[in-house]
Image (cartoon, rainbow, N blue to C red; front, side):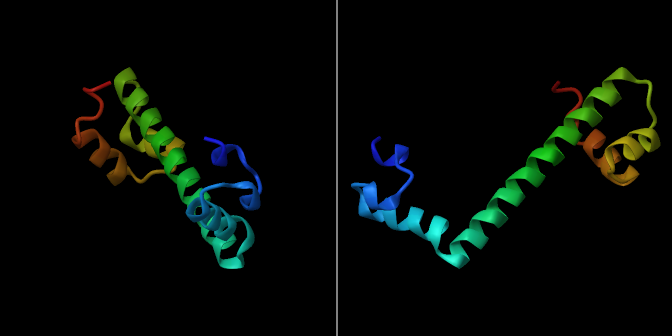
Length: 91
């Protein structure tokens, strides 16, 4: 547990973990990789939030697929595909 609270890899006991942390914090390629990983996670989270918005709007029954697509930035086809996956019934 000690190593997970360390900010500096030099302070870590487990060398394999320290080297990985050093790569992602200090190596140019590692920093680029970490930035890309974080961007991908953020994009995934935003997409999931929009899918939840689609589900909520579909459950309300007041919005057309075109309205939902306009609000969420998805295409009408994507909204229809989400609807066809029966995600709405599970919420």
